[in-house]
Amino acid sequence: MNDIRTITMDLDDTLWEIHPVIRRAEARLYEWMSEHYPRITEMFAPADLQILRSQVFTEFKDHLHDLTFIRRTVLTRLGEAAGYGDSHVEAAFEVFDDARNDVELFPGARSALAALRERFVLVAVTNGNANLEKIGIRELFDDVISAAAAGAAKPARPIFDAAVKAGGASAEQTLHVGDDPLRDVHGARDAGLRSVWVNRNGDAWPDEYHEPDIEVQHIGELDALLGQS
Image 1: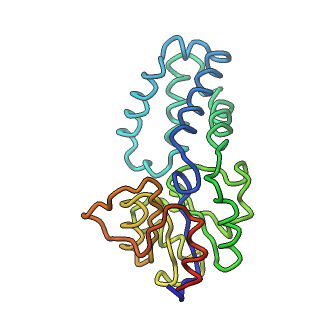
Image 2 (image 1 turned 180 degrees about the vertical axis):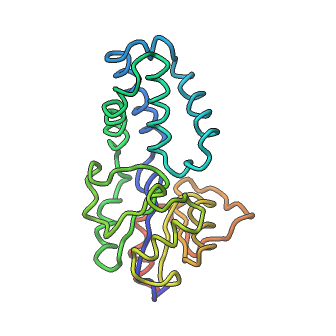
Image 3 (image 1 turned 30 degrees about the horizontal axis):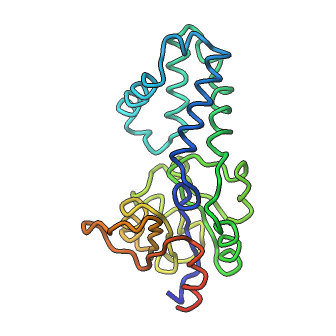
Protein backbone atom coordinates (compact mmCIF):
# COMPACT_ATOMS: atom_id res chain seq x y z
CA MET A 1 0.00 0.00 0.00
CA ASN A 2 3.02 2.33 0.01
CA ASP A 3 2.27 3.45 -3.56
CA ILE A 4 -1.13 4.97 -2.74
CA ARG A 5 -1.44 8.53 -4.05
CA THR A 6 -5.20 9.17 -3.94
CA ILE A 7 -7.85 8.30 -1.36
CA THR A 8 -11.46 8.29 -2.48
CA MET A 9 -13.87 8.60 0.42
CA ASP A 10 -17.49 7.57 0.78
CA LEU A 11 -19.60 10.00 2.82
CA ASP A 12 -22.91 8.71 4.23
CA ASP A 13 -22.38 6.18 7.04
CA THR A 14 -18.61 6.49 6.61
CA LEU A 15 -18.18 10.05 7.91
CA TRP A 16 -21.58 10.42 9.60
CA GLU A 17 -24.69 8.34 10.29
CA ILE A 18 -27.23 9.12 7.58
CA HIS A 19 -30.51 7.37 8.42
CA PRO A 20 -31.50 9.58 11.39
CA VAL A 21 -30.56 12.62 9.28
CA ILE A 22 -32.87 11.61 6.42
CA ARG A 23 -35.73 10.84 8.81
CA ARG A 24 -35.33 14.25 10.42
CA ALA A 25 -35.10 16.01 7.05
CA GLU A 26 -38.23 14.33 5.75
CA ALA A 27 -40.11 15.20 8.94
CA ARG A 28 -39.00 18.82 8.64
CA LEU A 29 -40.11 18.94 5.01
CA TYR A 30 -43.51 17.47 5.84
CA GLU A 31 -43.97 20.03 8.62
CA TRP A 32 -43.02 22.83 6.22
CA MET A 33 -45.45 21.63 3.55
CA SER A 34 -48.19 21.38 6.15
CA GLU A 35 -47.63 25.03 7.02
CA HIS A 36 -47.13 26.47 3.53
CA TYR A 37 -48.88 24.00 1.19
CA PRO A 38 -51.48 22.36 3.44
CA ARG A 39 -53.45 20.64 0.69
CA ILE A 40 -50.44 18.37 0.13
CA THR A 41 -50.37 17.05 3.68
CA GLU A 42 -54.17 16.86 3.76
CA MET A 43 -54.00 14.52 0.77
CA PHE A 44 -50.81 12.62 1.60
CA ALA A 45 -49.74 11.07 4.89
CA PRO A 46 -45.99 10.48 5.42
CA ALA A 47 -46.45 6.82 4.48
CA ASP A 48 -48.06 7.89 1.20
CA LEU A 49 -44.94 9.84 0.32
CA GLN A 50 -42.85 6.69 0.57
CA ILE A 51 -45.26 4.90 -1.76
CA LEU A 52 -45.06 7.76 -4.26
CA ARG A 53 -41.28 7.76 -4.01
CA SER A 54 -41.20 4.03 -4.81
CA GLN A 55 -43.43 4.64 -7.80
CA VAL A 56 -41.09 7.36 -9.07
CA PHE A 57 -38.11 5.04 -8.63
CA THR A 58 -39.89 2.41 -10.71
CA GLU A 59 -40.90 4.90 -13.40
CA PHE A 60 -37.49 6.54 -13.76
CA LYS A 61 -35.10 3.60 -13.64
CA ASP A 62 -32.59 5.53 -15.75
CA HIS A 63 -32.35 8.23 -13.06
CA LEU A 64 -31.79 6.10 -9.97
CA HIS A 65 -28.28 7.51 -9.65
CA ASP A 66 -29.69 11.05 -9.27
CA LEU A 67 -31.46 11.30 -5.93
CA THR A 68 -31.99 15.04 -6.34
CA PHE A 69 -33.95 14.38 -9.54
CA ILE A 70 -36.00 11.71 -7.77
CA ARG A 71 -36.84 13.96 -4.85
CA ARG A 72 -37.73 16.93 -7.06
CA THR A 73 -39.96 14.68 -9.16
CA VAL A 74 -41.79 13.49 -6.05
CA LEU A 75 -42.29 17.09 -4.92
CA THR A 76 -43.64 18.02 -8.35
CA ARG A 77 -46.10 15.11 -8.31
CA LEU A 78 -47.32 16.16 -4.86
CA GLY A 79 -47.86 19.74 -5.96
CA GLU A 80 -49.67 18.74 -9.12
CA ALA A 81 -51.99 16.40 -7.22
CA ALA A 82 -52.83 19.13 -4.71
CA GLY A 83 -53.38 21.83 -7.33
CA TYR A 84 -50.20 23.82 -6.62
CA GLY A 85 -48.33 22.87 -9.76
CA ASP A 86 -44.56 23.04 -9.25
CA SER A 87 -44.42 26.45 -7.59
CA HIS A 88 -43.25 24.99 -4.30
CA VAL A 89 -40.54 22.65 -5.56
CA GLU A 90 -37.47 24.88 -5.22
CA ALA A 91 -38.35 26.13 -1.74
CA ALA A 92 -39.40 22.68 -0.56
CA PHE A 93 -36.20 21.06 -1.81
CA GLU A 94 -34.14 23.74 -0.07
CA VAL A 95 -35.90 22.97 3.23
CA PHE A 96 -35.09 19.30 2.83
CA ASP A 97 -31.55 19.96 1.62
CA ASP A 98 -30.70 22.19 4.57
CA ALA A 99 -31.86 19.53 7.02
CA ARG A 100 -30.25 16.71 5.03
CA ASN A 101 -26.89 18.46 5.31
CA ASP A 102 -27.19 19.13 9.03
CA VAL A 103 -25.01 16.16 9.97
CA GLU A 104 -22.77 15.30 12.90
CA LEU A 105 -19.45 13.82 11.87
CA PHE A 106 -18.30 10.71 13.69
CA PRO A 107 -15.80 11.54 16.45
CA GLY A 108 -12.35 12.19 15.02
CA ALA A 109 -13.53 12.19 11.40
CA ARG A 110 -12.67 15.81 10.69
CA SER A 111 -9.16 15.58 12.12
CA ALA A 112 -8.60 12.27 10.31
CA LEU A 113 -9.57 13.85 6.98
CA ALA A 114 -7.25 16.78 7.63
CA ALA A 115 -4.35 14.45 8.37
CA LEU A 116 -4.97 12.34 5.28
CA ARG A 117 -5.25 15.43 3.07
CA GLU A 118 -1.71 16.40 4.07
CA ARG A 119 -0.36 13.21 2.49
CA PHE A 120 -2.84 12.20 -0.20
CA VAL A 121 -5.17 13.65 -2.79
CA LEU A 122 -8.61 13.28 -1.21
CA VAL A 123 -11.72 12.84 -3.37
CA ALA A 124 -15.25 12.46 -1.98
CA VAL A 125 -17.35 9.85 -3.81
CA THR A 126 -21.06 9.61 -3.04
CA ASN A 127 -24.25 8.07 -4.34
CA GLY A 128 -26.18 10.67 -2.34
CA ASN A 129 -26.60 14.41 -2.55
CA ALA A 130 -24.57 15.64 0.40
CA ASN A 131 -23.47 19.26 0.05
CA LEU A 132 -19.99 19.51 1.53
CA GLU A 133 -20.12 23.32 1.51
CA LYS A 134 -23.20 23.26 3.76
CA ILE A 135 -21.69 20.56 5.96
CA GLY A 136 -18.52 22.61 6.29
CA ILE A 137 -15.89 20.13 5.10
CA ARG A 138 -15.45 21.01 1.43
CA GLU A 139 -11.98 22.42 2.09
CA LEU A 140 -10.84 18.97 3.23
CA PHE A 141 -11.34 17.47 -0.24
CA ASP A 142 -9.58 18.12 -3.52
CA ASP A 143 -12.67 17.12 -5.50
CA VAL A 144 -16.17 15.66 -5.13
CA ILE A 145 -17.65 13.02 -7.44
CA SER A 146 -21.37 12.37 -7.14
CA ALA A 147 -23.38 9.64 -8.80
CA ALA A 148 -25.50 12.31 -10.47
CA ALA A 149 -22.44 13.94 -12.04
CA ALA A 150 -20.84 10.62 -13.02
CA GLY A 151 -24.05 9.26 -14.51
CA ALA A 152 -23.80 6.09 -12.45
CA ALA A 153 -23.96 5.07 -8.81
CA LYS A 154 -21.64 2.79 -6.86
CA PRO A 155 -20.93 -0.09 -7.36
CA ALA A 156 -20.97 0.68 -11.11
CA ARG A 157 -17.52 1.28 -12.56
CA PRO A 158 -18.05 4.73 -14.16
CA ILE A 159 -18.26 6.57 -10.83
CA PHE A 160 -14.97 4.98 -9.70
CA ASP A 161 -13.36 5.78 -13.05
CA ALA A 162 -14.44 9.41 -12.61
CA ALA A 163 -12.98 9.46 -9.10
CA VAL A 164 -9.67 7.98 -10.29
CA LYS A 165 -9.46 10.59 -13.04
CA ALA A 166 -10.18 13.39 -10.56
CA GLY A 167 -7.49 12.09 -8.23
CA GLY A 168 -4.82 12.09 -10.93
CA ALA A 169 -3.24 8.73 -10.06
CA SER A 170 -3.84 5.29 -11.50
CA ALA A 171 -6.56 2.99 -10.20
CA GLU A 172 -3.86 0.83 -8.55
CA GLN A 173 -2.58 3.93 -6.74
CA THR A 174 -6.07 4.85 -5.54
CA LEU A 175 -7.56 3.61 -2.27
CA HIS A 176 -11.33 3.73 -1.81
CA VAL A 177 -12.74 3.95 1.72
CA GLY A 178 -16.34 3.14 2.56
CA ASP A 179 -18.78 1.29 4.78
CA ASP A 180 -20.77 -0.71 2.23
CA PRO A 181 -19.37 -4.13 1.23
CA LEU A 182 -21.06 -4.12 -2.18
CA ARG A 183 -21.16 -0.46 -3.20
CA ASP A 184 -17.81 0.54 -1.79
CA VAL A 185 -15.46 -2.40 -1.42
CA HIS A 186 -16.67 -4.79 -4.12
CA GLY A 187 -17.33 -1.95 -6.56
CA ALA A 188 -13.92 -0.40 -5.99
CA ARG A 189 -12.10 -3.71 -6.38
CA ASP A 190 -13.97 -4.43 -9.64
CA ALA A 191 -12.80 -1.04 -10.93
CA GLY A 192 -9.18 -1.83 -10.06
CA LEU A 193 -8.88 0.30 -6.91
CA ARG A 194 -7.54 -0.80 -3.54
CA SER A 195 -10.19 -0.79 -0.82
CA VAL A 196 -10.82 -0.13 2.87
CA TRP A 197 -13.92 -1.39 4.67
CA VAL A 198 -15.08 0.86 7.49
CA ASN A 199 -16.78 -1.68 9.75
CA ARG A 200 -18.08 0.36 12.67
CA ASN A 201 -20.30 -2.38 14.10
CA GLY A 202 -18.03 -5.41 13.86
CA ASP A 203 -20.14 -7.07 11.16
CA ALA A 204 -19.09 -10.29 9.43
CA TRP A 205 -17.82 -9.88 5.90
CA PRO A 206 -20.26 -11.21 3.25
CA ASP A 207 -18.41 -13.99 1.44
CA GLU A 208 -19.94 -13.26 -1.97
CA TYR A 209 -17.94 -10.02 -2.38
CA HIS A 210 -14.27 -9.20 -2.92
CA GLU A 211 -12.58 -8.81 0.45
CA PRO A 212 -11.11 -5.40 1.37
CA ASP A 213 -7.40 -4.77 1.49
CA ILE A 214 -7.83 -3.16 4.91
CA GLU A 215 -10.58 -3.26 7.53
CA VAL A 216 -10.92 -0.47 10.09
CA GLN A 217 -13.54 0.54 12.63
CA HIS A 218 -13.20 4.25 11.88
CA ILE A 219 -11.21 6.37 9.45
CA GLY A 220 -9.00 7.67 12.25
CA GLU A 221 -7.05 4.41 11.96
CA LEU A 222 -6.06 5.03 8.36
CA ASP A 223 -3.29 7.59 8.76
CA ALA A 224 -1.23 5.33 10.98
CA LEU A 225 -1.95 2.20 8.95
CA LEU A 226 -0.90 3.84 5.70
CA GLY A 227 2.15 5.28 7.37
CA GLN A 228 3.23 1.75 8.30
CA SER A 229 2.82 0.37 4.81
